[in-house]
Image 1 (spheres, rainbow, N blue to C red):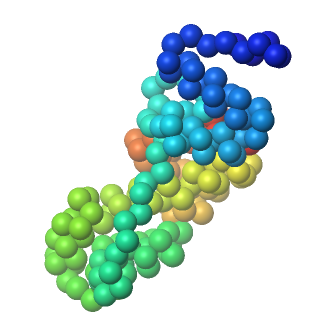
Image 2 (image 1 turned 180 degrees about the vertical axis):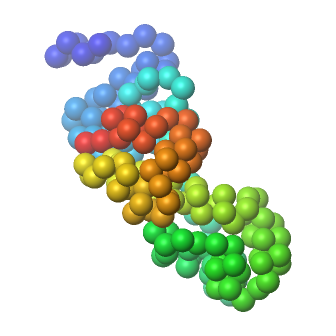
Amino acid sequence: MDDGDVLTSAGSAAGLDLLVHLVRRDHGPNVANTVARRLVIPPHREGGQAQFIQAAVTPVEEDDAVATAMAWALDHLADPIAVADLAGVAHMSERTFIRRFKRQTGTSPLRWVISQRVAASLPMLESTAAPVEEIGAAVGFESPVTFRHHFTRAMRTSPSAYRKAFSA
């Protein structure tokens, strides 16, 4: 509850909500969104949402073929990306690439690409008014339906609800 000079909250989680509210009021929505992510809480609690955590990036060796393919994929997210493309960049057969990719990342190449596309959409949803359809296309999803499906599956909220919660 914000009544000007007097602010109150009930419970420890509500205290975190109040903290994010104060940061938003004093420093703006971008700083508040960053604080909320670091606290692993949404900036506005509506329930049922996934925790919005920025994925840690682990350093990789320069001669790591899988890492090279991953970097290439990040530079080409808007383009169609197949396992054959990634394996080609890594100079491996598809089967070998899939096996090594899974060993290094714990997931399949295509699941990783989808998660990177969802992650790339977050700043666009937060900072632009571009339609969800355009954002999905900009990060490489073939259709708005596919974007919404994968986004909702990963984030446990819709792109529109995410935008409402995190936009400036």
